[in-house]
Each structure stands twice: as structure tokens, then as C-alpha cells.
Image (cartoon, rainbow, N blue to C red; front, side):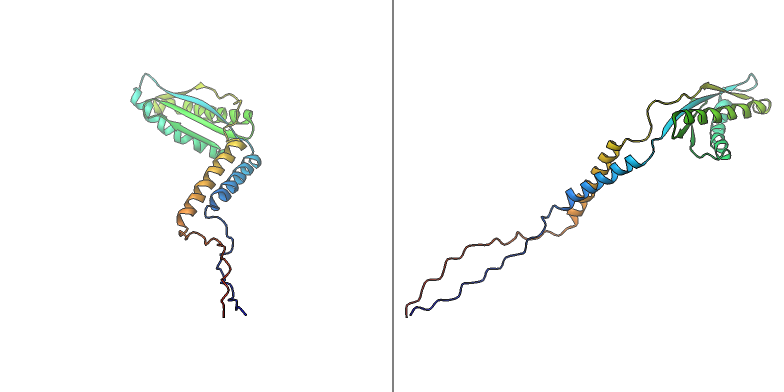
Length: 195
């Protein structure tokens, strides 16, 4: 009677996740996180007021430029004394101009805050005009903005998705390369041995 040899056992790897799984997973997580941030964060509006430093007949334009730098630093201190840190001031190295930008949750509040700081700055300079030789003038008052300065939810979602995709790509670079999976192969039945 012919003897049958037992079939050979094949080694088959268990199914695992594809090598590229971190890329779409982290991109989707970033997209969701960015979109949630954009939806849950209140919109912020920014309004800007411009103040110019004018030299009197006793001083020159160089003096006005130096005082513009000093008054620019003073503008943020005035806002700090009012208890509002949402004001920033910037000056130009070429022109005696101070740009005062305030941010708030409402457009009117942002414009009002920028104009308040500009008025406080010009009022302070008029009291010291005899000693400084310059005076400040509010060149352009702030108006209520019509669009928010903060990012919209679709844009924050896009930024989050891109950041997640970049992180996923970096994770892929750190994974060790693995050999290709062993595929199951059909093995023919052994031939019967004749005794």
C-alpha cells in the first residue's frame, strides 16, 4: 500500500499594517485637530492707528526719529497700565511714525483700544513738548475692521493636516525597512511512493 508523506507546512506571516500607515493617520489627526482649533477659538480682529512725531522749530528730523522709537516703546507700556496686553507698537528706522495695532474679539473694541492708546500717547507728548522739542499727532485713527485677523477654521484644518502629514513622513523615515512579506504558495501534493 502506498505511503503518503505529510504535506510541508508553509510559514505565512500574520497580516500587519502597511508600512505607510503613519502618513494618512497623522495627516487625518492633524486635519481634525486644526479644524477643531479653528472652530473653538474665537475670531480676533485687529485695528491699527498711526501716530507721527513732528519736530518743533527747536529740533531737527533726527531728533523726531529718535523720539519715535522711544514713544513706540512707551505705547506698549501705556496699554499695560490699562491692563490690556493685546496692543503692539512698531516703528520704522526711516520715518518718525508709530504704528499701534490692537486686537480684540469685536471689531469696534479693537479700533477703540488702538485709538485710546494713540490718544494717551499724543496727550503725554503734548505735556512734555517743551522739554522734548517734538509733538505727536494722530495721523490716521483706527477704524473697525471688516474681516478677522485670525485664521479661519478651513485654513487651520489645512495647516493641521499638512503638519500631520509632515510628521507622518518623518515617522516613516525612522521606521526600519522590513523585507517583503512571504506570500502563500500552493504546494503540490507529494507523489505516492510505491512499495
